[in-house]
Amino acid sequence: MKANFRRFILYSCMSPVLVVSLVASLLASQGVFGQTADAIIAKYIDALGGKEKLLSIHSVYQEGVAVMQNGNEIDSKTWKVKDQLYRQEISFGMGNIVFIVTPKAGWSSNPRTGGSFKELTPEQLQAGQMEMDPAGPLVDYAAKGSKAELLGKDTVNGTECWLVDLTLSNGSDIKYSFDEKTGYILREGIKGGGLMGGGGRRGGGANGGGAPGGGGNGGAPGGPGGMYSIDFSDYQKTEDGYIFPMTIIAGSFGAKTSVEKLEVNKTVDVAGLSKPGN
Image (cartoon, rainbow, N blue to C red; front, top):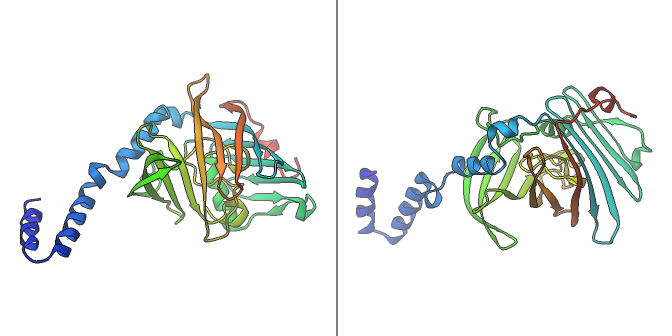
């Protein structure tokens, strides 16, 4: 620190540009405005009840209703079972979409396939398997091989946020906007198309299942290499003390999803739900 200060005095006598660059470097080395990515993520985890509370989530079941801009409704059901299953069923005017992801394989069906199930691509399978972690990738992220970087400030619907970039061990990139005051995630930005497009926890309805911080949100569209965002709000605590956002807005859809049913750690028929056609 003393060496940096001596360089600051030296450069201040030479070039204003060098002074600005050095100050920026010093701030970056100490965290933006004294904050760090680790501290922000830790606040988020504490806001959701703490690490042990999140790690105690073994299964999540959600039902949601999304209302499109044209007034059409999308109904969805989502199951997550830790390291065993991710399943999502989406019903809309043109038919149904089903995603099934297991540790070894995955399938999907939609109106274009006539309801028949097709195997997921390796990229889609990888994206879906990220959803089998109900605690989300931010819990013990370093132990999972991920890296977090504080990018600076952000604003979501007028609320000041910290913007953190999380790079997963598989190379997927997720940007989180954390509410400065509450610590909650207000926005999640994902590169790629999730299960639908082959890219990249949380969100009911057409955007995955669970609480935010999942990095998958299988139902949200977005081209491979494109970016899409999902907004989370109306965080509520369940009777068992688990906290989830009950309103989710997928930027690409323009749809507002309301979570109408939420069950944590209830019995799930993993074997039955893992089979295409069921």
